[in-house]
Image: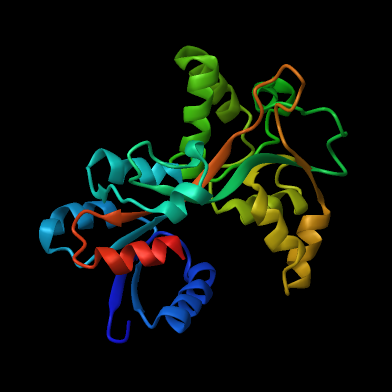
Amino acid sequence: MIGAEVNIYSHRQPFLINPFLEKFTEETGIKTNVVYATKGLAKRLKAEGKNSPADVILTVDIGRLYIYDDLDLLASIDSDILDKNIPQNLKSPENKWFALSKRSRIIVTSKERVDEGQITKIEDLANEKWKGKICSRPGSHVYNRALMASLILSLGEKAAEYWAKKLVDNLSRRPQGNDRAQVKAIFEGQCDVSIINNYYFGKLKYSEDPSQREWAKSVRLIFPNQGAEDRGGLVMISCVGVATSSNEVKQAVALVEF
């Protein structure tokens, strides 16, 4: 499709997406134009309305995705390829969005200062024995909002609120930084326990920066709530959808299918 283009609004980071987009253009001839932003894209798309140039939306988490869905900014698309390859539980019932990847929200602890088996559930972080020993990124971040939503669903609103208050009581410092910063804080002794997405550990473990590899060596990973009778840990999804404003639906669907 020489001369064809598709415009993307992306919450995903460029280094994750660009290699894929380059391969897509190489194989299809369709040029991609990307607007990268961590927030505000849904409001922008809504304000632009039918005049929006956006064709494809890439979200980093369900916490971003539901905003697009609630504002009816995603079109329903028909695709035999997507129907065949995406399980029903990982796509919208109306085929408005499709999951591309999954990640777990897990617990990390100091290998030196926390014994193995002391923490097995996310609920354990409310125990007063961890007072002054937990660090976290801000609770307003979509990852932590998704975790809180899962606890409300599992425990009920009152119990989840109680857990959140007790967790805050146990914090060693003001919430700050990203997930990698929490592992660094454990390495430096600022805290003993934190919550991160599992792939951040891999980024640290295989980093070109030797100091970051040392951070990874200092922590133990815990996939919480894995008991035989327990509910399991939180698994989040990143998703893709086609904007209702798209004037290039054929090319947009081709990218989603790719």
